[in-house]
Amino acid sequence: VTWESATGHFSINSPARSTMPPGDLTLIVQVEPDGGRFLNGVSIDHVVNIRVPVRFEFNPDGHLIRDHTRLITGNVTIRAQDTGLPIEGVSLVARLVNGSTVLFQTVKLTDGYGVVDYRFEVQDPVPGFYDRGYWGEMGLIFHTDSQLLDPTNRFWLANEHGGVNITYEKQQTALISWQVASLIGALLILGTLLGLAVVLRRRRQAAIDELADIFSYTAELLAAGDEVREAIFNCYESLCQILMRNGFLRRDFETVREFEMAIRKALPISEQALIALDRIFEEARYSSHRLGEGHRQNAQLALQSVLQQIDELNEIPDRDAFELAELSA
Image (tube, rainbow, N blue to C red):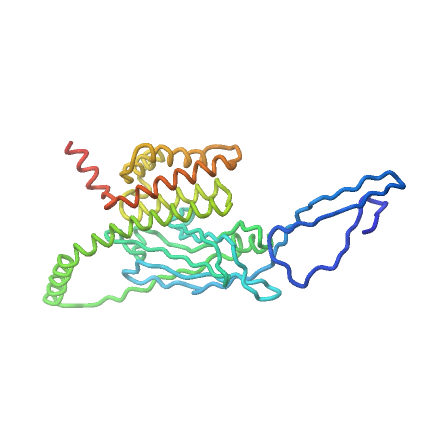
């Protein structure tokens, strides 16, 4: 420890370990009392943030969208540039976008191998990803606000990387006779009729499981100490996207208020649970004050209440069926 008279500060120089864990470390600065000069002793804890320069490995480095493609999946590995060791606990956002419009989004943490996966899927009757008239020209981009990473790496990922490339398979024109076309049509109709019950049952359970996964994951993030507003807002966006993907919400044709009303109608749970859920969404979206531990606890209670009632649901109602019932009434 040396005194720098030019700045009026002490300078602390100390050897560090060759490798140090990323994140917040506590530096304890302690001064012993000096009775001869009547100086008091003091001990101060100073937080030092260790940030790691990293490299991102994308697998795959591009996606080819074919006709009838309904699933896009992959993973990203994050490693330290100097040691090549994986970085655990980094929050990474993967977004499937059309220009500035976010179509789907996942938020996950890297595991012990530094790997985080992403998965985007659509179910019938929503068109597959090849239908550019419905989805537009898609892109796959990534973003992270993790304080474990060097700021230059975060900036590169969000602004310079450009995302994982998405290309579309060129369709080939095939000439078939009307007899073959009729036979194929008959087989498709027969297969549709035979598999209708199975498809509906799987779709119902998949939708319920997806909603439960979003609420469970958000509750885990809150319990782990993640930032309250970001966790709740990501939960809201993911919930809306699930309902759109299952045909409950019409993309680009609803106001914000209609969007929220449709979400409330889509979850046939108690009014008390819906009100609690709506309040935490409104608090996260529209308030400007800092959300503290009280807001975290309220959000956890609301999510637990919704999860408990979702476990008792048999299915999510179809939007068109719901509106038809309203018109009939």
